[in-house]
Image (cartoon, rainbow, N blue to C red; front, top):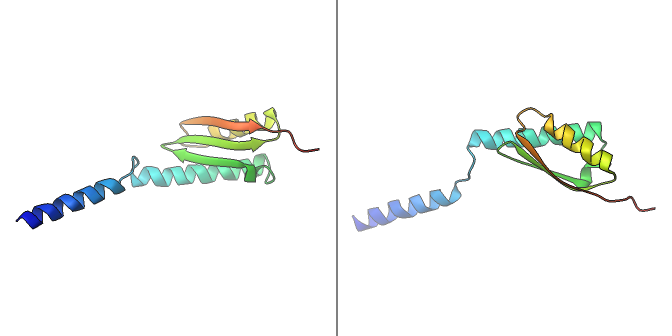
Length: 101
């Protein structure tokens, strides 16, 4: 009986440690949001900028980070992300970095 209780406690502890704060449906939705934002950034801003920009989505909140070449590109990236379906909010951590001459 002690071993059964120990086994159940151990299993619960292990399973509890593997849980995330998102349901599987929300995780899939976030993957779709991230893919859609990256796709729109590539088509609307250009593929040359995309490798410098990181896109992450959690619970519909999109975080943009990395470097862009102008304030206009930064603003456009934020607007693009805001207009993707299912995006709740955009956290814009993009930095404007001048292109090397």
